[in-house]
Length: 297
Image (cartoon, rainbow, N blue to C red; front, side):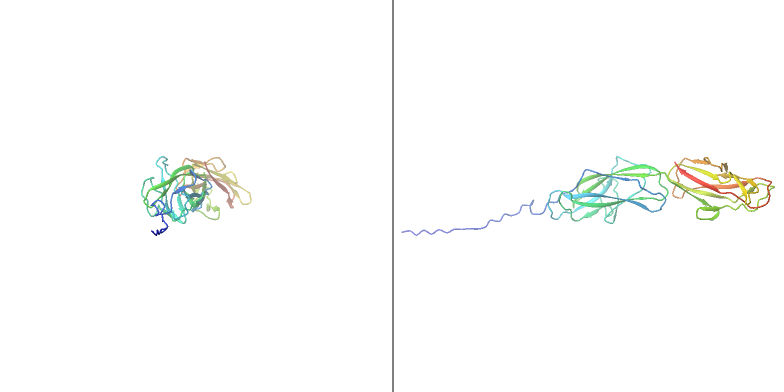
């Protein structure tokens, strides 16, 4: 008789992870096909920066919520050069970003913004940006368009996705004027002609106006007394001439001067002088008030 003994062998087979599944999948990508920012609410003359906020959405396109890091860079496109561009700055997460001169330029500590974790999901997360434009004098009026490219770069320096960014900066026509040289307070300046000699030509001390403008501009003068000095008791009138840049100009409205260009940050000074020719009027105090208007075109 034979005794047969059977032994049941059992075990658990463990599948070894492949290289593809051993780590989470990371595929950073932009949400959307492009971004446009129009910057037009700029108040010129404040000597600071006007800021416009916008955002770009980024996600992990693989759908995996595991570790996923990327680096953001911004580069200029050579296809849209701008002559005498208005300077601007870009910041994100408190870091000022250097804009690279071309798409394939190597990154640097000033250009690279590290994003340690890119979430998955349909909308990903919002990366905020601040566009800053200096609003001091020296800018030129008009519209400027800058075509940029935002890049997502992996840890090997390879570009994994790009997003076109168009920035349009609109500088409005704007002008400001200040009287320089005489004494005075606030917006009223006082020109003291001193003691007038009725037998000869009298000249005021030299003074002027300083003009700041983003575009071509015109200058106008409007005399309260139609170009005459009036006695304090209205008992006489003495005509005078207003000279601007050594040439007589109208003090009773109309365009006294047209300037075809804007100014730099220091503005442009136009010398002025008051000339009173010999006259025959009674003694006393004489005065006039003149309003100066500068209009950007």
